[in-house]
Image (tube, rainbow over all chains, first blue to last red; front, side):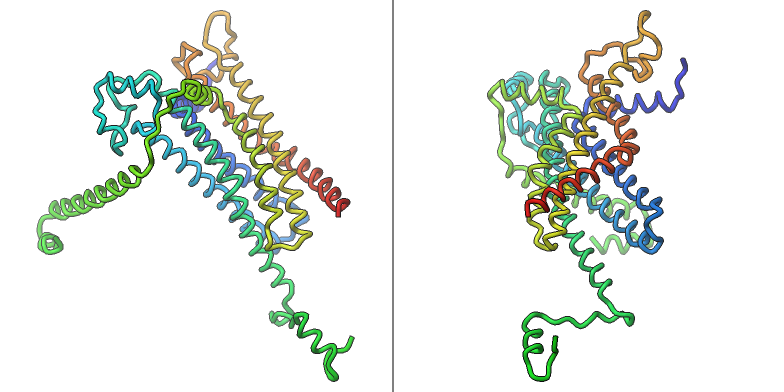
Length: 202
Length: 198
């Protein structure tokens, strides 16, 4: 059975890029998941017969803005946390006893540890436990980054945005035919008018 | 330095390039130095306990996207309804509906997200066998070319990645077919329940 070449290329691409980088895979597939689910939401609004064209002209940009907040906050936060964790492990700032002992045996100078340009993964002889430790730290970091962005930062940003939009819509709904807002009274004004001799009577 | 550039503008272009490179390397040096200073503020940490190291290594090997989805869902249930319930910028009724929708969305999204990812990763594992005489061709459809060992960590991670990508493709459809109706059903049930508690 001969497979189409794009499938073979795709398999090799995934193997080469994510086989040794599970943390990166979680960040990229997480972002792709957000993109696809956002596209689904936008598509659902676009093809919904019960929504008028005027409503769609507002709802579709709103969905796009919502999607942008979700995707950007996810990608920026998660990839930053993951990249920082990678740098910490690469430079030996975050390490294990076994890796440290192996580095000493390899004759790596102590001053190099923690230097921004130092990368354990690029040594001629990479410590045996390095790769699995790096993968573990990256997976934990990308999961913590996802939790922070999806479950804390995004809901707060989204609520802020949604509350603003709701206020704008309510303000639009409460405008008269001339585009002027209806005159409103607070309770003190209302009481002073209602109980005065020449004011508002109910 | 600007004098040199001014002179060179009428003459050799290579000098301008040198100037830009010089300036560029200066900026790079400054950025690198600032990064190093910031990096130095992070304390060094060495894990001495082998149980902790083993746990980190285990997570790296076994924590695939399906398990991550569950972790996200569980923590989402602990934070998101709380954030929505304390959103003072909207009225009480909207807030109740928002909390109900959030809980419903998390439960529906986590359940379908986990099951589909789990199923796809298992499916990919079954369809990415190492080619051999007794292995049917269709069972190697997702095996990358040139792979002869299915026990390496890189190959296990490839299976997780391919399973996750397949799951994401399937979830484009299940978003409409399962998530949306399930979320709607549960949201209405939760709103009814919260109204009964008023």
